[in-house]
Image (cartoon, rainbow, N blue to C red; front, top):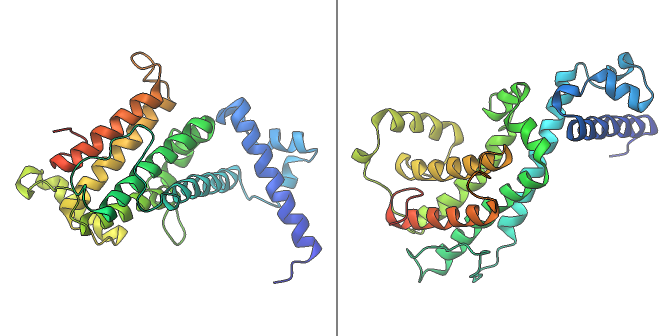
Length: 259
């Protein structure tokens, strides 16, 4: 498709607006970013920005989408870079169940790799992580309820882990608690979520997958928002140990709990 000069100039201006907004976000914080401040830095008037973004919220949403694209791409790269037969995962123990199954070990290494990639992006982009996961402006995006077609950025990140758990379940490489060990209300909620994400996982295995994902997300959030240093000055070592515990928990049938 041929793009004319006017379209190229417009696309370049949109990208510059987003770059300036993101730089201000990182240096000044989300509360200091405004269309007026962005326009001043770009040598434009605030009304001129409305030709590119109808409102500040539209600009924030564009930034959020870009950031989720980055997180998702980082997790996909990490997943796809794990070679079959790869046995080391940066001080994380893979666990024992299915140890003689190369495919299962590969899936577990992928699970570890995408978890580490998620944390690595968060550590390298703390301000952006805060906008994604600690800002009222993006609550709808995080919950996967923004308007439009297709899954939200947050949902796409969780789908990566769900897909890996689909592989692990098919490889029979993690234990699922019996239905009577899980609260009925939780199973009902997961049944609704299962329909929404269109996963191959039955509710029980999906419960394990979501328990693992929420624990990983919680660990990273605690670190980024400064709630771990009181006990662990080396958060990376703590995260690796927690991943080892999660892998052991998959073998034990208790998500995230070593046997």
